[in-house]
Length: 254
Picture (tube, rainbow, N blue to C red):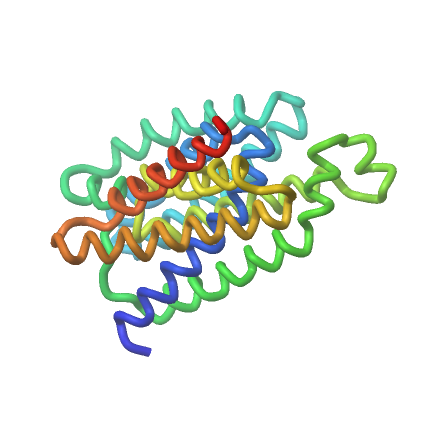
């Protein structure tokens, strides 16, 4: 697979995962928390750079550890997820800024596409497929747990386990976009297409489909425009997604 084709495949996988995961993040009112989770990767990237390890690996490890911490605190204390994420986010951002400086900090925050290694390619393909399978297969359970935890339990759903799996899926999705959007913008690609789809969709399945379509459109058009203007791709992708969101408000207003 050529470098250009590999980058295209991974960016599309990122977009599909972001669209699917974002729908439930919006329904769970994790709109602001999504950016916070993304920032949890920053300390891992900084430590990996100091150790001479692949930055993506450090970001993934920190995301998974942060997710487990968020889930454990939420489960034990019953503190709302967004509150726990906010605390973890603040600590992660402070520690990450200490370890990451200069050009490396800019790349970690905004992303920088480049040569793809075999391991990164394998993770991107497997991760995006895994996220898609989980969301599509568990979408009804996720909705039931969202509506009523008690109803979910009586239906035989392990709410705590399902919540952990969703948070892990969210973290994997963030990791998929670290190269292209960085920790600062990836949360936006998860939330914005889903928020727009919420205004346009008639049901859950159409919301998922519309969110994925918007995420893919934003990624492809933003990447093409950035390449034409010789600029970084991330800001263009998010700007286009935001434009689609504001257009979607017209239907809501109507």
